Length: 200
Image 1 (cartoon, helix red, strand yellow):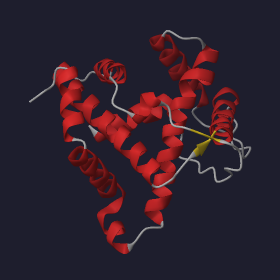
Image 2 (cartoon, helix red, strand yellow; image 1 turned 90 degrees about the vertical axis):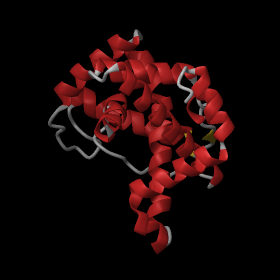
Image 3 (cartoon, rainbow, N blue to C red; image 1 turned 30 degrees about the horizontal axis):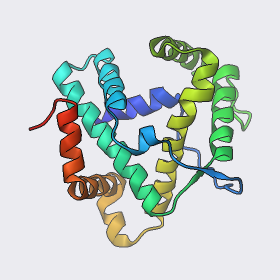
Image 4 (cartoon, rainbow, N blue to C red; image 1 turned 120 degrees about the horizontal axis):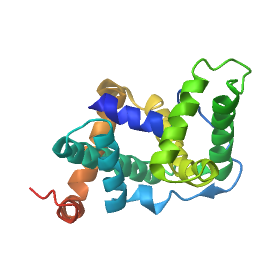
């Protein structure tokens, strides 16, 4: 199921990989509340997405909860570490992504081999979301991009961390962040599980 989760991020961003944006000279923007906290509507959107990918209802519920807990835990850890994402970083990342998908040429002038496939996927995503093409780029994608860039900055912190942290591996370090979040927010997590009908 980890591949499925990665697929959601990849499909949502239609990105070919993380691009580090180190120029944060512009004003910074807070992470949106809808990503920075547990949300029933985000949870339901994830469940719906997993089901569209062919995951049965019960597994979709579990995967959606795990995904949202990871998302919130990583964003809160980034905030604790003082990491920020600027509006310019988000705008530049989206501009590069949009150009590569629409033209088939990357910012570096290289040909993007699957841009037609990406355009078809994008049209399907936009149709499923019930929004316009411009709404996707200007309203929907910026929120996901903030999360993606923040996760990338967390990865940069991991790269520069101690050998003890490195011994866990990137996935292990993220898992420890999620475990710490669950431990420190037991009541909040339990209340959210009750709200979405998954208390056990």
